[in-house]
Image (cartoon, rainbow, N blue to C red; front, side, top):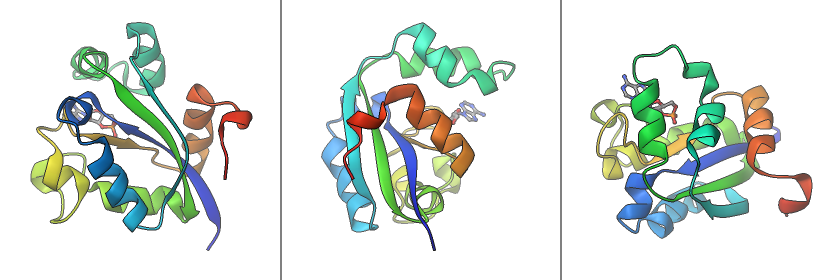
Length: 140
Ligand code: CMP
């Protein structure tokens, strides 16, 4: 299995409830290494750019409003099979459908305020990492 990197975002519902450390503990316990991390407040343009693939979706405006409603923590995770591993630890997008013990099952408030984002493929991970980080920011 290859060592991969993936982009993770701890969302505003989680930072508001002071859950950054709790989420990070879940990631690290799953064998993922946080090799870059920054707490930022997204602008509307930055949120729209990040979620551009969802622009035509009915939830797009609400999603961008939510993602700019408070600080987020953007991070690069590294590990064996990191893209899939992170998605397992996060659980399903809708917390009502997420498996017990996952971040979204235990922490998410709703399908929109679902505490964490993770890249859905290695190709998208490369694009999403480059959206927030330069190579110099990532210390493996
Ligand atoms: P994320 O992994 O960040 O990728 C896109 C986000 O859109 C997703 O998590 C959810 O927060 C949000 N999303 C997806 N489907 C819906 C939906 N039906 N209603 C509201 N938000 C959604």
